Length: 397
Image (cartoon, rainbow, N blue to C red; front, side, top):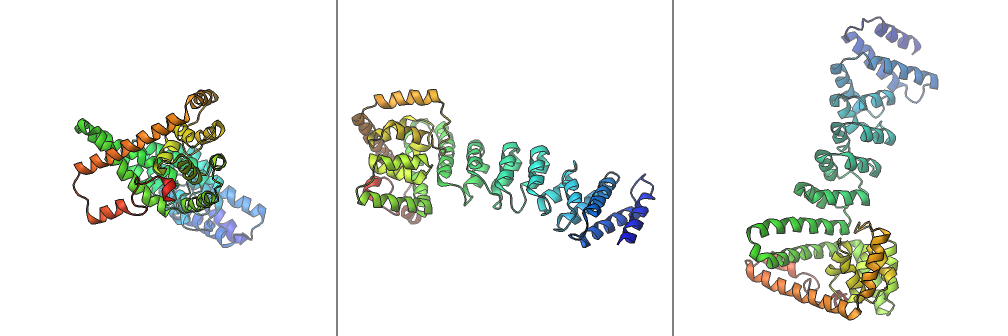
């Protein structure tokens, strides 16, 4: 091996570096093959020698040759790490792209560095990898433009953290295509999906109201009903919701359900358990409890919690749940505590009764203004539990 390696080095060093030749490329390719063939058997000194040779060669190889070799090593799991790493950091996307998208020789730290420092084209290449860790995905979403973020949202192999989903939902507010990609992901937490639906529905409402402002109330009612029907299907298919529902049902049966259950669920960020327990104690539709916890306005949380007989520590935990992403300061919390303590229980219950009555009125009006639904749509709207708003969640569980 030493004789072959030395002859290859001489072959390259004796070549005039005015422009790479076929002989030079052939020598580089043979050095690469030589490294791969003995991978795992070389001493540390031999590996360091290979590293130095690769660094030297890469400085004199023209773009066309780098592109050709990059495509070759990108799909080789045993490609020399030094060569792969150097190609991945090439400013030319034609060289770096194949490596960043396909090479399994890149480490997590390599990908983090590239995602943190390189161009949008490089980020887009990383976003198309077969699998992407949460750490790399987070950087892509934070730094990436629309093309990069769309690629991440469409990539089923990208692992997306709770924080990243929150960012994707926020960016979907002004990007209908992104909203579709995010909403189609099977791994999206349900509370993020609900916020996504609310954002999308606001966009739909604004367009319809621009042409028909006289139908404002009816349109809002119709859109809300559609969202609730979709949410009902998703809720019924949610394993997390089913587990929380079974636990709360058991507590209710043994008359052990109380404020402590809501408080504990909110403290540990258990969205499903918190909304179920809160809706039962307040005797309000679960859709109302979900919107209260997820909405920006803290007032609705305070109203439902007061009707449920909760104290301020529980309300505070509900307001600080990560699902809502309110990011309230100490001053904000002090102000809301004053509002909550001024609110009377009977007033809170009357507000909930008013909301429920108004919601039912919207449903009746909107149904009279739209064509009769098909048999399939009617089945969807009326499926399970006798409809969304027919009874409180406390009665249906």
